[in-house]
Amino acid sequence: MSLEIVTARLQLAAVLAVALCACGEKKPEPVTVQDVDVDAVGLRELRSHYKTLKQTTRTEHERLQTLEKQLEEAKKAQGQTPAEVEAQLRDLQQKNQELSEALEQGYVENHPAIRAKYVDGRNKEVSKAHRILDAVKADAKAWDRAMSLPLEQRLEALEEIHLMMPQAAKDLLSRSESAIDELDLEKEQVFADRKGLREKLQQQDLLQRRAMFENEQKETLADLDFAEKDLVERLGIETLRKSDNPAHAKWNEGVDRRISEAKMLMLEVDDRKVMSRAALLAASALDYRQLWQSERDRRIEAEKRNKTFDQAEPRADDRGEEAPKGDDKMTFAEAVAASFPRR
Image 1 (cartoon, rainbow, N blue to C red):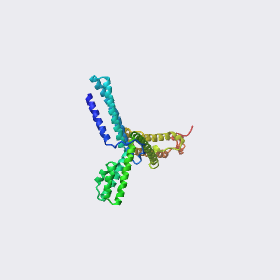
Image 2 (tube, rainbow, N blue to C red):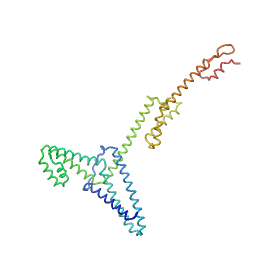
Image 3 (cartoon, rainbow, N blue to C red):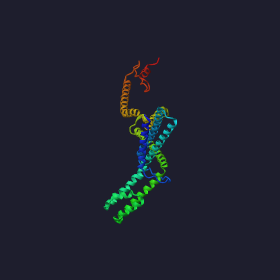
Image 4 (cartoon, rainbow, N blue to C red):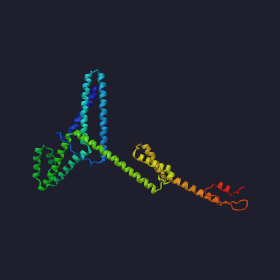
């Protein structure tokens, strides 16, 4: 890529950055940054905004590194001196700084908390004023133009509009105008220290994300505890039931291991292949348990029948007496051997 193309692209990016800055408010005198309430903003919006900012920042950083490399290659190809290369590099860094500032401004102005308070809040007051104006057949567009004028001219234009309105409507409209002025003034004060505001918003975003993660983790663990209790008490799932017998400590360790693995799946695993297998196994678990119970019931029934047949078999010694019945703990062969006379 030639130096001219690189320079042209940088100039275009700078123009876009200037255009973004031009869309913002007039920069006021620096004052202390006021608190910005983010409690009313949705956590999902905060998360989405944070991811977008993170990706944009990473992209800008990678773009700077790429352009620096391309600039170096272009200078070497054209045989320019190191001094000329350094001057071009400084110019490139300056343009990147401008883009970074534009990114910072965009982050602050489009942050959900800022928009909820200063954009949506102002629009709400403007809509309220329009309803008042429409109710008394006043010109809402003339009022909009008046509100956009400098302070002295605005007061004169608003006074002309107020003269044509009933006193009650005029009072209501004045309240909306005062609310709008307060929001605009507060926004100027907050935006004066844009860097401090950005850092504060980022800190609040991180705190919101941490609180959201901890809350989700807490709710997940509570759901798992409920599920464990429900599966044991209502369905009687054997693999989750513990024994009070100290001799069954190994089995109880297996129960703890299964519960621990379930928590790991819910809280830590984000591999879709692993979760897909877990979902299929979960869907198959009750059917597999039913097959196992059916096999167990048939086996127990067969053992009962065999035991009945064994006990019903006639046994007599050489004196014609009935052989003693075998002990329940004896096998069939042991019971038969015990019926023979001793010598």
